[in-house]
Amino acid sequence: MKRVHSGGEFEAKIGYCRAVIAGGFVHVAGTCGQGNDVTAQCRDALRIIENALIEAGSSMAKVVRVTYMLPDRAEFEPCWPILAEAFGENPPAATMIECGLIDPKFRIEIEVTAFVG
Image 1 (tube, rainbow, N blue to C red):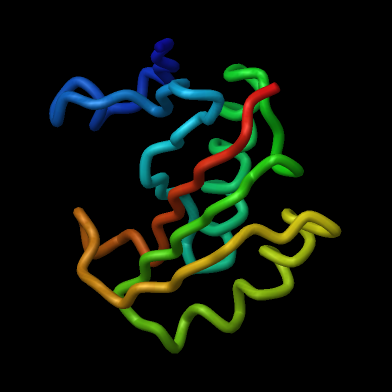
Image 2 (spheres, one colour; image 1 turned 45 degrees about the horizontal axis):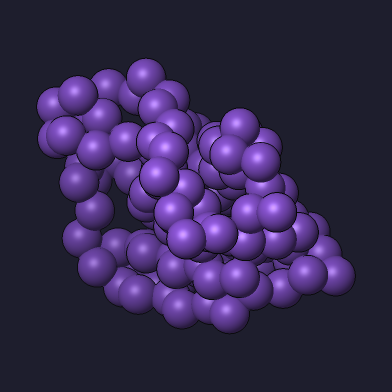
């Protein structure tokens, strides 16, 4: 098992890491991005996730499962084109959950599991 740390502010506060590689898969923690709206945050979260996947020896093309968490499900549809572009010809199994996030400024949190190898 290997752990990937990003140095994000919540890692030390809460006690987690960006990703864990175990059993042939990399499990990337729920990730929020920065930005003024849901689409900017979505793009930034995907950038952070992609960097973690690369560091773990994987890629966006190897994502097998994704969970999207939003405080307002109405904000999900504007993200669809961004998500379709990010996963392209390799769409993962997906779930969207409407829920509260750690801070009201966050409009989307994304969690993925990807194959390594």
